[in-house]
Picture (cartoon, rainbow, N blue to C red):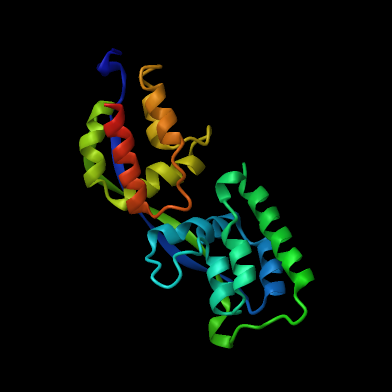
Length: 219
């Protein structure tokens, strides 16, 4: 077993996303497309991922804000479903995701004979975000401790380390896998199992359960 003293402990963080108006609104699908062309990537990220930290009591089957708005404000469930199945994990960069989103909207526009408009109070408002990070005072010194820590881990910690970490880290891996790699190959199998968990179409509480099961099975 690697010398634990040579491996830094995992410092568990929690987080919250502060929503900030981006100053752009759309009242129909064409306006939505045009704003998406130029909107800051921070905003695009928020509208795909930010909903995981917000309760979605209305339509949990729609996994991004664009699909939810099209279904509610434009009353077009066919277009909403096509937007909802876009998986941001399938694209290497947010620019690639932007391109896919624009192309999907353009295909829908070509098929729509009578475009609908949202009411003045139902316009899509683009939002950017600021992440606020909190120290949980929880330290993990060895991978086996994850079995004990995961059940009491806040959902904000799941978001910060398992999702936000992929954007933050240069190798696009989450914080858990990067930490496990510091132990050499001993926990490569555990890291691979964690990497197979899909973070996008699963609520954070369910993600936590999956992480718990993966760790319990390994140890």
